[in-house]
Length: 283
Ligand code: PMM
Image 1: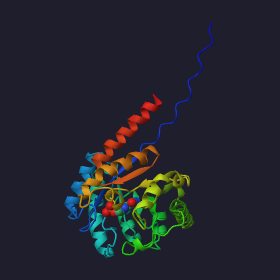
Image 2 (image 1 turned 30 degrees about the vertical axis):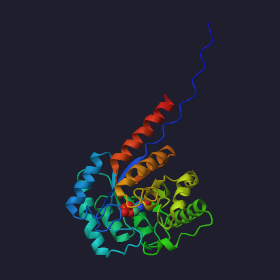
Image 3 (image 1 turned 180 degrees about the vertical axis):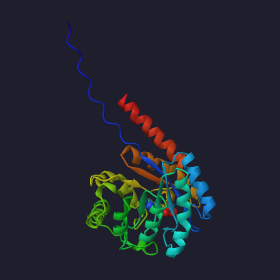
């Protein structure tokens, strides 16, 4: 009898599938989709469309964070997002709420949102950590140094990747101390927020150093200025969708938990290519 063939090496565990978070901005002034979904019905229809195109969840926001943007009144933000969230959740769609305000986060979770996406990681509203803790929702803590009307002046770093990682780690400590379950925290490098063009590329190239903190990582590169800078002058914002999809693919290959995008079609295709590539590696 011949020796049994050596057992094949164990196949690597399949990488968890990167989630596609489709953006629904219920704002008149977003830089990237220009207020097209400002009306609640239009926003709802857009959320449904994004899911049909392959989004795993949609991120509903009522306050623009484009560079230079002014704040929206709290009541107005609530009025914009809550009906949209309630209707989308009623249709079986998974929703996150993009807000820096604790009151909006609480109302959104009450309406069915399962993730609080706070671009300030709790820095903009002292009540956010407590609300996030009590809500039981997952919580995206994005790297942030100040509101959009002044963030471009806050982009000084000794080592952008290390500084962002350390500042996020400090936010995690504060959130956990306030009662947020560490298991529910997702980190985000905050591309474009107090970051100059090349600093965004450093953060993407250094994603593994952020992931080494041990939390899922969300990447929000979609249609941002640093992608526009690669294109001819005056190129329409939609021309940033191909570079966005490439960033989505590279982020997924590096194990990102999710990517936040406006154009779901291109990113869905890009992530399907990554999944096929990865399955070929296992087969
Ligand atoms: N970027 C914008 C808004 N919300 N949330 C997260 N977690 N990460 C981001 O990079 C991010 C965000 C920028 O605004 P847009 O919706 O107008 O693109």
